[in-house]
Image (cartoon, rainbow, N blue to C red; front, side, top):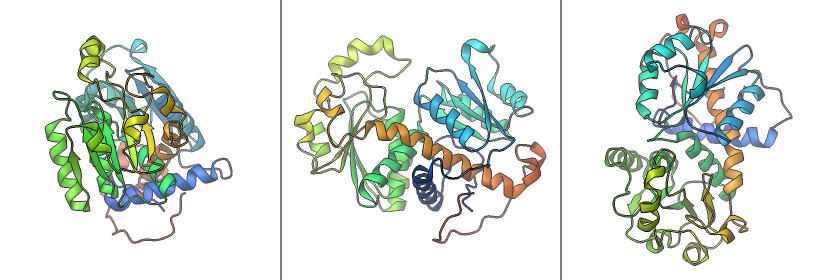
Length: 338
């Protein structure tokens, strides 16, 4: 049975290499078998989905995913609740629900919740990390190429939360990451340092480039994101000038390997970070990435809750069940999803 030892999923660094490999395999199995097998991993479980930022893909994928695993969801937005310290809010919620997905601004909010939580906390997006998106991206690459080790992906654009998660998770799975960001918009140096350490452990490489053309040369996938993230709208005009020459278009794509994937986490500003012809290109994977949010997040929740059931099948989500368990070394095998 597939299990994830960590109770929380905040940056993706919680996953061991074997857990990440297994998660992607399970996600692909879930994609292929969707609708053919009833899963009850979250039966009698309620997941709180908290949105402090607008959402389409995260809301749909988590809502549907929890229900397809047999659970129920309750949604909260900032306009529906009063402000409370994260430490207090989680101590209220864990007496009522069995897990929390938080889509927020400050990553610190997730860390403060997790410090007091006895139920799973999943990062649906924060200003520093978007690990669920990176899981879906890895699944998209695996589906397209049949492997991950040895692939090269180039990210061109803002050094934001999406790039941070790509740097932390893709090399761990064997994918080399190239990135090119305008001066002043590079990734967070502390996260970059952690990413380099993880890449070295996995035998992968992270490389920074000065021009988009050099970054994408010969790569298997080109990835971009909006130049102005939510919460930075007041910087939009200045960013347009800084990001001149960073558009993913046919000319830039011509320097990548043949049949390289075109990737974007969405939503997009057509004509800014990506040209219109790239969206419907035969190698565009934009909407497969969006669908894979569902499958990858279902696999993530399966792994976390399967491990909770190992601790106490009768009291999943109950604080009294939070006891330390021994972890068995991973060996390749046919995985049981549920």
